Image 1 (tube, rainbow, N blue to C red):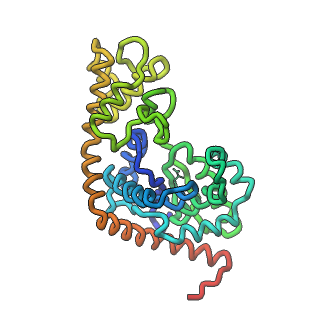
Image 2: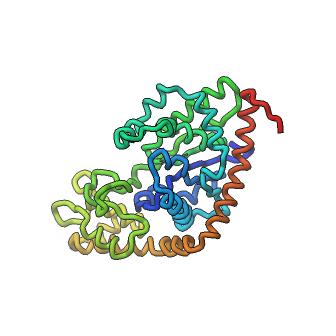
Length: 334
Ligand code: TRP
């Protein structure tokens, strides 16, 4: 809670290649949050450098990520959209929180264990304290809810532990946030292995449909999607995971119910069905893509947006940071 307002906060990695799974499972519903909460969406470039980045690409993806979220419907008038490194309070609070986070706690983080196995040549301290910077992101805004994917739930729980620990020592410092993990009903599966979640980092790009894939690519990927034996378009995630996943996608993009879809394709083969899924997906993404390229073409406007977002965010961040500094005993001589 910040004053009278309930706060929702989420961070997004600066990678341009979001999938239809990200879109349907999360981004498309973001605008609903702004009705109920004061909402912050942060492009987390400081988190990104925990693994090696190529500077020109990081820059490009920072613009792209902001543009893509705006193109997906996040209205900068109703949500605070900004870039993490432009609000220096994140780094400052992260240092303080580091001093209230235990080595053992960080060692238990699943993502740290996975990432250090994948980047064995670069197990840097930032990778280890990644969740502390994330906790700083969240706590700076006195956040009530954090919409995240299931893989980030453990980090939000650690953030709660840190907040509670500090509140014990210095009562009333932080709002303790709750993670909100999007319902599994919206979980979109890989087109190649439909029992696995669609993941933007999948090496098989045919398994994944990106929001920015062009129409022909989208249709081709759905044509190649793995279906199941039999020929019936019927929703049965146990027996027919491939077809059921395509039905969910079709349903999400067309607004038709699963029963309507079963009726529509009764007596038709998988070929017709897969083409229809491709077409409906391409049609739904076309306006998002158009908007994205328009926004990206105007770098100055995006930069103005980043500036405005950073100013808004700083207002909140500064207040929390100075409250924390006071509680800890730092002098406030200005
Ligand atoms: N770690 C998150 C991810 O990889 C991104 C993130 C950074 C975040 N800071 C956050 C998410 C704060 C929610 C709240 O997806």
